[in-house]
Length: 250
Ligand code: NAI
Image (cartoon, rainbow, N blue to C red; front, side, top):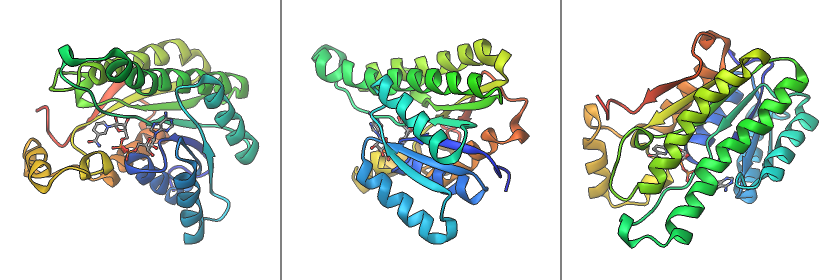
């Protein structure tokens, strides 16, 4: 129960890494707001988890992280329901993109920047303001990627947005330290979520082979690390990147 008494908002919490983290946080004693653009899926997940003996520990809110007012409203709703905010996990994200010279900026650049970059900035801003107002400190964890630290095929825009997540994390730790806030970014490699599970068995095997021990990372394995980072046990980890890539970048 290392998150007993904490309140967390998890963006992209209706699926994949976010959903696994919601489950882990609730098991560790936290109260969790699932914030997702897919409200139906978020509400279904909240109902299912509540029904597993966690009544009153989980709720859902619809949010498009690309719109600041919606992110601010999701933070306000979390505080309204659970009384405070202690942790934000900026995890909502989309992938995609074509080779650079085939780009249509409206398709291959803007939507990815709006979600993967602006969404994290807005989460940091809205949560940071709430943490300052509460005077309680807080933890900001944001999902970057191995591609935030290296170039890769079909990832021109995604890599830029994920690099921004790392930069935002360092700057947030720097700027918000005076309010007792910590910030950490994680860099997953190949994780077995719907983003990857949509591919053929052959391609999934190729992805697994890129990581040491020939395995995709399970979303639950990422969730375990995020729960640790959110807890007071990780109090000395601040303004940095924690690799959760199963040895992809060794
Ligand atoms: P997923 O597709 O299973 O979950 C993403 C969630 O974000 C979905 O529930 C979706 O509805 C939500 N979402 C999308 N756009 C949104 C928006 N504008 N506002 C609010 N919610 C929105 O994906 P997965 O794999 O769990 O990805 C989570 C994060 O991990 C993303 O940031 C992704 O870039 C990152 N990541 C994933 C890797 C993988 O191999 N699966 C590897 C490295 C990073």
